[in-house]
Image 1: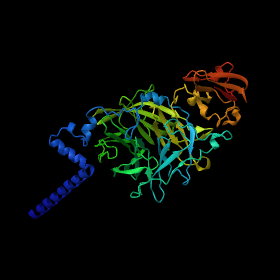
Image 2: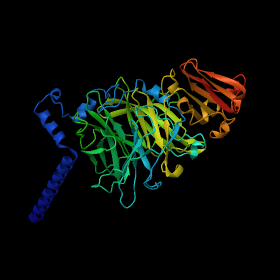
Image 3: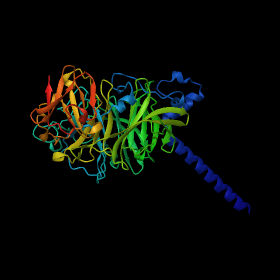
Image 4: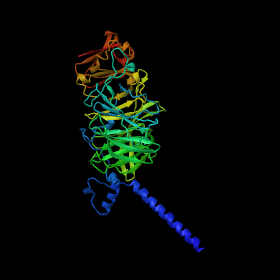
Length: 518
């Protein structure tokens, strides 16, 4: 009997010891050296205010309001702030400018489609999944030589006076630069997801089979991204999106979305150096879509969906917002949602839905983008919000990538001819298919006979325009500037007519040519 008790005692001791060791190993795995250093600092009564490069993450996050860095000029570790994010979101055009990219590597399928897109001046960075034998998610770099190099609106690069836009490939010089970037040491990470560029550093998530890593790339030389040594390793969690921004106190916030971004993990850097941010090994907290969401929308909508991309935007007062893109199957809509972030207490981040918007991806009855594929927000040097989206595959004209640039309305001051434009819609109230006519592109897209401009003859039912004072654009009901006419007068600001049937003479579904007068 005593021998049996002794054996049981020994076994019990061994089991308890094993569990204690295992627990310690588990704790050491999820706590970085920086976390342990912080604990030592706290027990030694060192004041947090004197610790510049190392922080106690949880206390830091909830010691006050989580606020972004309100910089009005972009630099190497910071994006431009937006004066009023909700207004900027609501001003996004519902019909983007149709664009394209030359992509001659190989055909992309639904199994290895494009995932995320970010812009830096006249460069675009696009991630792509790859579930082939090599299984290496990719980061592709494109340079758009035909487009604006100052960070302003691109406009369409698929205009030709002799060809409809749906059949026109992009300018030959707007193409991929070189072989995709991937990590040769981790070839099994097949999915490179939605990502974000902050200043000149981007956070890119790679995942497979519920394990993931976040890599960081420096693009101070935009044609040659350099992978930094910093990594966030998530051995038991997926990572479909990565959102990155600078905080008011010069640390950095990283939000990693799980599968379909239904969970959001919050990390805050322990360093103020974007080249070595020292994110902790485990998130400070996790938000998931089962948590209550508030709403400021008139219909009280609190819906949170399966987002392909999530990007952080900082308002110039420091308020942080998340903008998410997805394809909403019940409504067959490509849509954006906007959420404001607030800290409630030491266990809760509150999301408040403050905007939603359905956008149109088709042009001339053919899809040019897909919000279940690559999408991404962009802030121009003037603090204006844009959104870019591509199709899932390179099935555009001549195996090119089709995409859209959703611009702000207006995208610049209306007092200059360089920014002058007229946009017509086939339905009233600015709905349905659109035709965008920029003064700058008047030679590439002549409007003397709309029968040959994307089949827009006798289609226009509403119109909006942005023209300088003393400049007019005249609508004619016959080709070659003949027949009855109605002039759209420039006022130096955005103007609209929601139903052209109410003009005199009535021009609803009766516009056949359009003439610029300078």
